[in-house]
Image (tube, rainbow, N blue to C red; front, side, top):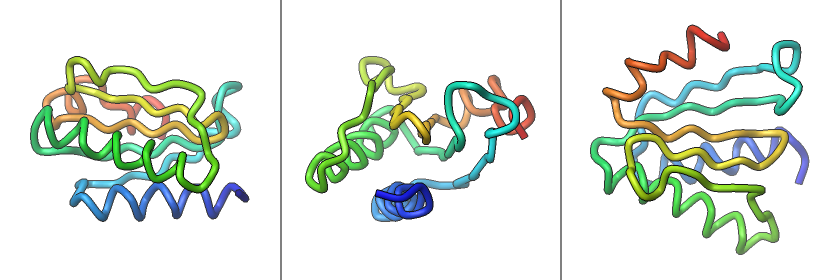
Length: 105
């Protein structure tokens, strides 16, 4: 899957489960580990985990296997690593605290 298609695929899955405040960060020039970071918010631990689970499940159905998924046990912040794209699904408190948009934007 081409990079732009992957990005749109992940955004569509986030929107399917009503993930909020989706931010697309181009970090090609700032990071050696990925090209794009997508950050979004969920309303609760369950919502955060559900969004990440949907992205992972639907990706696997089209032959995309994430390199890793971290944080599902706590649900404060779940990271889904697709290599060229990393998804951060966060509760508002964690998002406010870590401020990834400021760090990478």
